[in-house]
Image 1: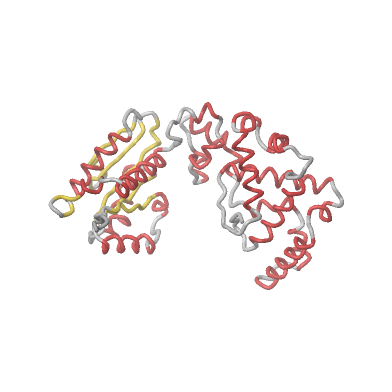
Image 2: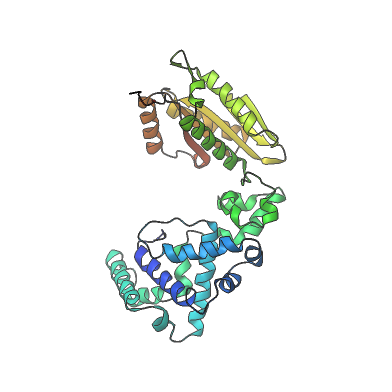
Length: 354
């Protein structure tokens, strides 16, 4: 079952699965021909296998009972398939009889009743028209259709004016797989934005802490190291991680009325600027550091993205930090662009020897 932004999950998954089964996954239809109809030529030409795989996944996911999240390629493919079916509905007078079976009609009637009972803004016949009009399905299936603008989003960014991303509040890295291969090959890490690069770095650090011995660097004589030492360790990790990637890293950078722990920016993209502020999970300034300190740094420096790292050495610190993240409230719109992450530095308990 694909997760859509609607309460009628079963209805839309069932209807879409029927559409795919009848129109695509039959003995007469060639999947490659359908991909060529639905997707841009460069995707068909360069990522044929990935496109076929995504189409099969849409078919399988709409049938099973597990919750599946679509990637950008799934979204683009499904959007154009729904568009294809909507045009087919216009051309075929018997469309509803051919493509919607008895269970489909029943699920539509259940959805109509539920909608009437919940709000009653429309008459049942009005809801019926909506659920039988395939042209309206994208409104139920997609929160947005930014993937249709991928060429414009990339081109404006390449020109140094990522105003579309800023206006829509999106991250182009989500749509990375939709880019032509020659463009993808320019970004070996599969990330275009510095924000995504830093997220990837933090995942790498987390992996090395959890499955390696990296956590030992943050302990000395059985005691947690000071915050300054944590900064030095992170600085060296970042220097190595971003080696030869034209990323400038400055520690204890003076911004406004104070010093932020790190500021990073790409030398070839002035808009690619990110701040990182670190706090211990035990700090009495944990909330203030997020709601006031880091926000002020972002405002004074005009940096649009930031990371708030919480270093935890004990179970109590970790639980306190998890609770803080769960309960934190956006007191300013700028905080929508602050990524809060826990740096779990608790000692790893080794298995006892028998």
